[in-house]
Length: 361
Ligand SMILES: [Zn+2]
Image (cartoon, rainbow, N blue to C red; front, side, top):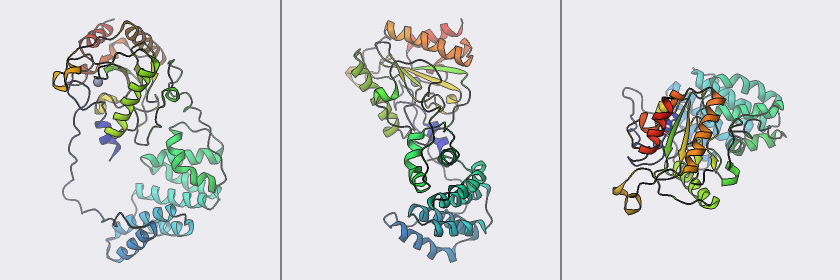
């Protein structure tokens, strides 16, 4: 799924009282050639390469480029650097778009890493980088950082899983994790991702532009636990719902506030959040208070009772918002409740009023 579409999905829960809206239906643009068919999914890598070889003679020239790029990528997967490089060079012999050229150069670079020749690989990866998109950007920056002994600012866990084979083939160590170690840029929190057992961020995230606004949410889930373990369980549930339920890269919010006022580290601040729907997420730091602050009788008895944020939650919210505003020079007029940006009842009247008052400061 394109990252753009995932960004549109960008909000927590699939209920009106909370943040999210159903995803818009995917539209197939009219007037384009049907895409190149794919080999049956149950074939082995080698069988898939052979399938593409058989297709080649009857493909249109533009599809032949795509087929050769795919073959090269399959050869890389199978650990066959020579065949991979040949396929990528053959692809380069066709009429390539900038994106396809990026893929071909990247593939050639990876084939050299696989042969233990990172110096040769670096030249091609550097050539590829300006034309790459999606996860390939981070993967390529990651390998370049490793080859140059530089540090890597990004979601190194997810990338290192995919790129580990190239590093070890090239006898390189993983690059240092300068930014990844301080993903909240010095903003204090009480419970780190490691402490609450966060799952590593997946690759389908967008880089955060300079934050200039803050949006406040509630989880829309009844919750009253004050123990650390019950708060952790709640935050983990939110992440699971966002990643497994909605295919998001990570928990959608940058910070979550427990009922006891503890600040939980959420999505790293170098990654754009997924909490306010579509473009509302741009430059927008998402803070979510645990609890259900809106009556939702259609969701059952447990949801009929409207909770209020605790005093400690409100104190933590004030503290966090003022830290963030100081760090990023955010104007008080840019502190919002979710419902000020989108038709939703989130974060409920109490917090919406708080945000409205805050903006008039
Ligand atoms: Zn919300």
